[in-house]
Length: 597
Ligand code: ASP
Image (cartoon, rainbow, N blue to C red):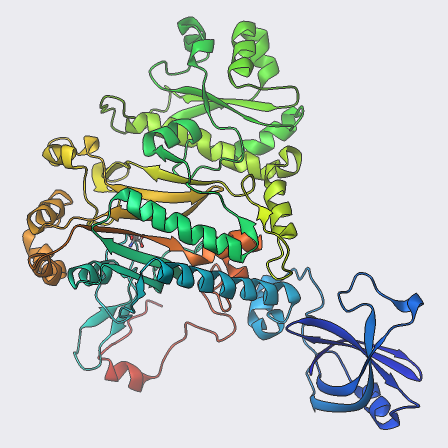
């Protein structure tokens, strides 16, 4: 039983390619054997649903199709039932490059019939199952937390749900189960996990959706090391489910080092990072080149790009945000004319070989950013960070653009292609294709250029480093947080932290984040109360399931691994949501809509 993928009419023989979840089989309707079935076969169109009774037989040697797993056999039908017809679909599930994504999403049920999508969701199921099994084996209990809850601050806007019973009051959909999982620790469940739905009202991107699934966990009496060990194990299990090995332990790097080496806190390790090339320039050179001598001078290379024309280089310039405190030099011929020694030295320091495209990024004294210069021993200032990030972003964009030339991403694509978790074959080595890295020792606060003040870099339950506590109010820039991110191939997979488990510290942190005592009471009073009743030290993490599946499916967007996603405009084009509701519904909810025309 299945759907007709294709029909070929050869007169007295009609061939149907019958498709179901497992693949395609060829059916033969022979006019001499089943005249009635053959007559029905003439009316059949693509996507009709049919049932066939028949005998599996070997195909004649000259019509064997080696490209099909079932290419050696066919089914000689003795009976054919048409279970349902089908309207002409706007595209066929047998096409594999359907351009218009909106049409795919509108007719998602047709789109999901495509073998690629069937594979993605089977993969997603297997990965989720492997993670559940692994965490269960590690002693974790899956416990559900409410969807109708109270606002949890994860830095996004809340989705609100009006209460009918309590006029003028609202539930918030959880941005994450953060507070609930901490309360579960206070409740004595020392290892909790959940494949949790999270809701964040943010602008959408290829790797972001309004609702998404986290592998959310929390454990009592845990250090950072303990959490890393747990996460590495379930990640390895998830990869194994996709037929790929992922060696553990994962490397780790401090936030400052990550910025210094990659200009990003979610570095892609598949390509060379940034190199400090300050020593290639004399002070006079820097002055002549109008480079800020007090800020970093770095270079990076994209391997194997070859020589670029002026026009080609100029096409890349929009990738670099000028006037944000940083500038770049990508014309090496010109640099070599004016500053031959420097040009040679930069390429040498960057480890560049023939064909590598090298770019220098440095501070731009003509467009200084209004940021803090505060420096603590061994730590980066905000202005330094802005130069490194400018370089990091440029590197990321150019890496994408020249993917065909440097080939580093192709390695990942090949591993994904080679992996076949269902064939019983050995797992493919994923060590070069997937590069996980822990980012540790984040700063507790970030300087917000627009607002001109220090803002919390994480949710407010994150514990500061014990030894930095004294500086909370006096020197916020110096305070490090006890939190960590897991990044892979340039994607942030998730983050976590050791939490504050003492009420007085929690109150102090709220205060340092500019949350007044009254506001803290109103929003988190229940939680401050709970902290008083024997709270164990605890910590946890949450990783994005959708992103992990996206990586392992080799998919370009989250929408390929979420069955019913929203478009970039936050619309579900299949069910047509959001929509208006009736006046009665609004009245019941005590809501009046005030739209400006
Ligand atoms: N609740 C955090 C988040 O959603 C993760 C965590 O700290 O465990 O990013």
